[in-house]
Image (cartoon, rainbow, N blue to C red; front, side, top):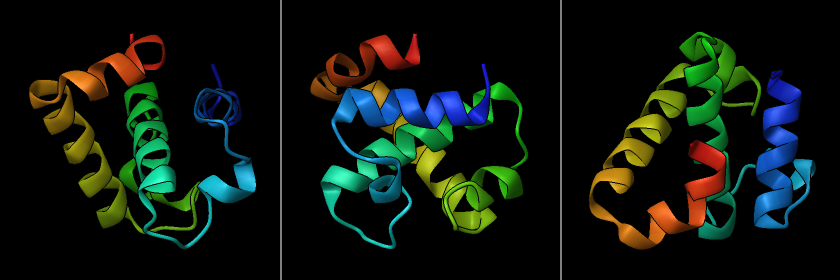
Length: 88
């Protein structure tokens, strides 16, 4: 699986475009899919810097996003349901 295919799959799942997922916005409907895609890319083995760069962000943003996904997977049942097909 490539980084491009992961981003495309996440975008289709959330019904957003690849341009939208890479926007400089903090809207929840964009931040959640971007965080999920960053998490998937990190699990693929990309470095923090590479994950961030794929979205025009820095490594710290990628680290924060992945921590958020891990936290939500632990405590948020709705999040687990929304991302079941993506993160399994």
